[in-house]
Amino acid sequence: MDLKEIQNLIKFVAKSGASEVKLEMEDVKITIKTGSDTETTIVQQMPVSQPIPQQALPVVTQVPATAPLEAPQKTSEDDSKYITVKSPIIGTFYRKPAPDKPLFVEVGQMISEGDVLCVIEAMKLFNEIESEISGTIVKVLVDDSSPVEFDQPLFLVDPS
Image (cartoon, helix red, strand yellow):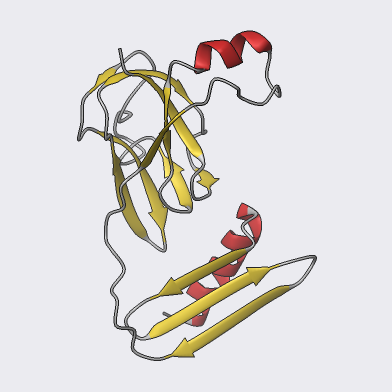
């Protein structure tokens, strides 16, 4: 990992709003902490015993019926029957495999377990996010090419 890649990572973390990111690769261990107007980067050259997985699985949770009242009441009641697919990693969210390719999924599309929903790029690795449930895509909660954080909701799925 060269200096330019580390600088780009620091900029990305600062823009994402994450307060701390730890990255361990074969010969580099990086911790980036962001706080009030300061950034601290710790880089250590050392072998790490655990490899980073190439593909992460999404975190799927049921949306609680008592959602915060940030949205209109009607939306909270409607969303309670849907399952939220959340981001398993931080990175950049893409709805297509390439700019000239079609979207992985669209609103109203039926999906089944194992279907690729999107791709999240992290450190130049493109991680396919697969569905752990079957159902219908109700809503896409993130814009294409947007940064996402760990556990950020990506999709609403109607399991019925």
